[in-house]
Image 1 (cartoon, rainbow, N blue to C red):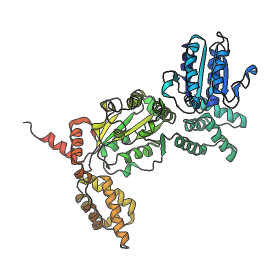
Image 2 (cartoon, rainbow, N blue to C red):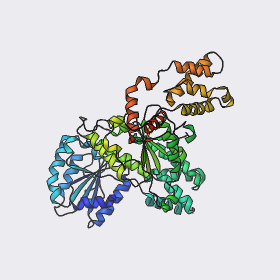
Image 3 (tube, helix red, strand yellow):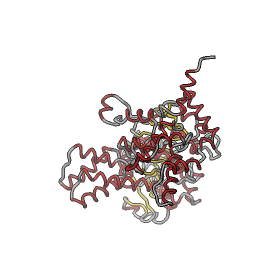
Image 4 (cartoon, rainbow, N blue to C red):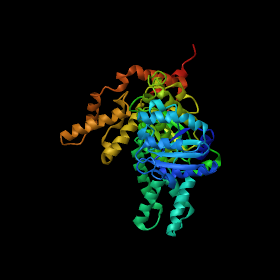
Amino acid sequence: MSFSDEFNLLLRARYPIIYIPTREEERVEAAIALSAKQQGDRAVYTWDFVDGYQGNPNDLGFGKRNPLQALEFVEKLPASAAAIFVLRDFHRFLEDISISRKLRNLLRLLKSQPKNLVLLSSQVAIPEDLSEVLTVLEFPLPNAAEIATEIERLLSATGQRLEGKVLDELVRSCQGLSIERIRRVLARALALHGELRPEDVDLILEEKRQTIRQTQILDFYPATENISDIGGLDNLKDWLIRRGGSFSERARQYGLPFPRGLLLVGIQGTGKSLTAKAIAHHWHLPLLRLDVGRLFGGLVGESESRTRQMIQLSEALAPCILWIDEIDKAFSGVDGRGDAGTTSRVFGTFITWMAEKKSPVFVVATANNIQSLPAEMLRKGRFDEIFFVGLPSQEERRAIFEVHLSRLRSHNLDQYDLDRLAYETPDFSGAEIEQALIEAMHLGFSQNRDFTTDDILEAASQTVPLARTAKEQIEFLQDWASAGKARLASKHSSLSDRIQRQLQQPEG
């Protein structure tokens, strides 16, 4: 249901007070005015703290610097007068006892008369005593059609014409920005070289990064890692490569749905986060990193609103990769938290979206502790696949050493005994191998020489791998994966060898 349809429904149902969190005042007020016209040409009265009521000459300036008087104005109008009262920045006054009490006193009148209060705010900030009084209605970012209209309006003013393909690329790159930001970045492009060009997409992407930083919910993460930077994990890499073209128009014509997402479960330091970055780079899609902890706010409704904002922004930036690192820490013990059900509601909103989403947002979630994840998260339909990323086998450790040493010492890679390094580092994860290399470099640098195979082995001998310090947890994960609960990311991991041995054992 579109914003206009939902807003019109709330007006017809006489919802007394509607709370719209948005930073796009001009655009939302235009949408409200259109709805008012559709609802029998209702009057619209707009108030703000500095100028009071505007638009009606008889009441111009009424309630200036007096939010309580702004509410009393509702009672001045005849009972039969249909009207919408738009109050800007009114969230700042809701903690005031006189404002809170007046809003609740107005409820009976608003329910019995064709009048509605609309509170506009840049954020959700609802006190506890008003949580049952206000109805929060999200105002979406502009869709592709609205963006195209805005760009064409700008082009007509400059007399420029763009090819359909270039226009489509600009529209797609602008998705996720407000109309005001779109106008600003396009004006910047025009000021730079007098016309819109295909390369202006880079300016738009920078504006997106700025927008995402300001939300403080998502991070626009630079993805420079390649699939080839991942040592081992052949099953997972094959799976990803096969889906590389799944976001193309050709895939839509073939009848393929958009890929939904991937859950990577396994031991710390085995390349789960690296894989998320490599997917974005290989598929040429923007990578958005979500810190789930940022979704939780202190005010009533704030956490749910942030979750909806995260979903809205992700879908507006689609196609994209949404990376959720260590999702198990965010939703562990979701039913037992003493936070008045906030975590459960956020979790419910999130997994419902994952199950029902039609937008090309590919979710890559990583988890270290499968025991703490709610069962609903693992149900089919949330993710396309669940992969277990275990400790690398000897062959994979050799590949990991080769990846790192090719980057660090490509000119003399043949001087390092990769086979010996792989053999001498059993139970080492990819992250522990990298740390051993760094320690070996420190050793060589301190003695004014290049580091050697022996230096790496010396550094490795000083390391106690996680496979030994967290043996029970790792064994549980391996048992869980070997029971068929997840696909193995590696063809030749130590776990796949173990499963193969189990399958070859005679029954009884």
